[in-house]
Image (cartoon, rainbow, N blue to C red):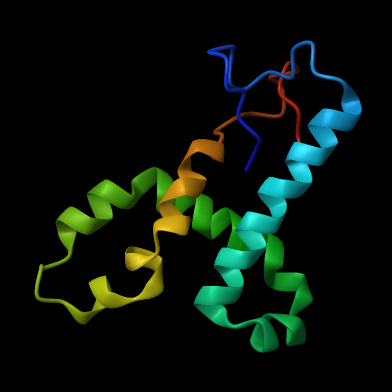
Length: 111
């Protein structure tokens, strides 16, 4: 997940943004991701398994990239579509922060 620029700049590059501002936006996005994961899995449960957080973030990002295809494959009568992952608007708002990048793309800012 990565903070997005608002002025139509290259959305995957940290151009001309002071380090403090970038770090602040990064913290905001991380807090939003944590809030969504807490809603899906509960804070108490996640607290017991802190090493799985990064895996869950990657899973959430993957879900968001493929959410349309996933939703098309699930029957509309499925109870799965009633889970927070599919119903929370906060989940889908995070999609704007999802990046697909390779380590050799040196212009990306990684977290």
